[in-house]
Image 1 (cartoon, rainbow, N blue to C red):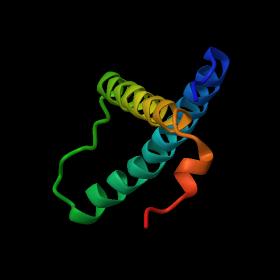
Image 2 (image 1 turned 135 degrees about the vertical axis):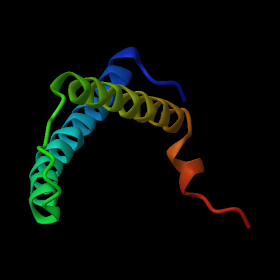
Image 3 (image 1 turned 180 degrees about the vertical axis):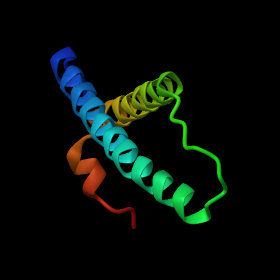
Length: 89
């Protein structure tokens, strides 16, 4: 069973959306924890957030997650649902 081009686009959009949500949650949760850890350790070192590097890492992670989701969905679309649900004896 082959998939259509429109179906593959939908899977890619879903994978990209879920990876974007994960990246946003990761950044939103990690920055406050970094501030708390810096304050708790009291090392006298200011917390600096390199915005450009942070955006680059988030973009790369979104791209990798979207690609892996796309290829997994593409592979799953090639398998018949009946074949996928049967168990070998």
